Image (tube, rainbow, N blue to C red; front, top):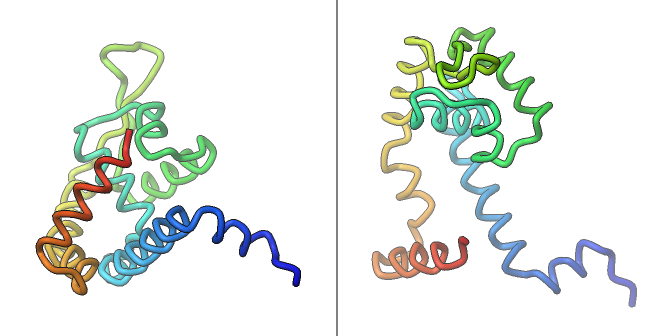
Length: 145
């Protein structure tokens, strides 16, 4: 009997596969919630990271989101064309710049968060008890470095 490499991966790293599948499920839910606002889950993640920092360098954003530099540059262009982000000179580095939300981008980000609210969390954990949710959160935090 011959098994292909994906079956081998799933046998050797079942936890990694489960985490991947849960992340895909979360992104599908995010897409369902955000599509009426014409925002994709990757765009939402970038906008949220910028919102949390109130201005961030591209290098910091790449590190935080583990995104390929080319992909992030293309994402910046799309978000800039939509009028959601702007580039401002970095006061701490005359050669660099900060990525900031425009007022429209900040408003959109706020609307996205309001739209998602607790619904996403509730949908992700609907088959778990409150104790199981707390256990899962605790275990996942222990996995992180």
